[in-house]
Image (tube, rainbow, N blue to C red):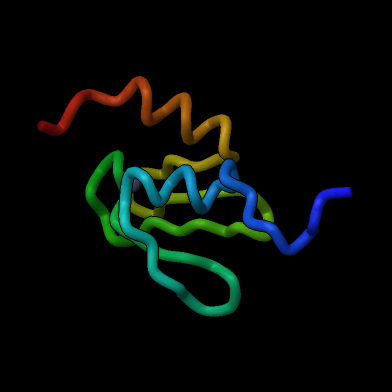
Length: 76
Ligand SMILES: [Zn+2]
């Protein structure tokens, strides 16, 4: 059976980390720069598999993040 300690490559933290740098916040939450609006009020809650941005109001689960990041306008 799978080792519960092995990292899951598809966790919301790993997926979002490919788009913006995340740093530890209080507890198990993470913070970073929002890949959608550039606000630093971007939060990831791995325990709940959710993210939320207090700057632009984007949020949801891992599927919502992927859908949003693939549909955003290119920055570069
Ligand atoms: Zn935002």
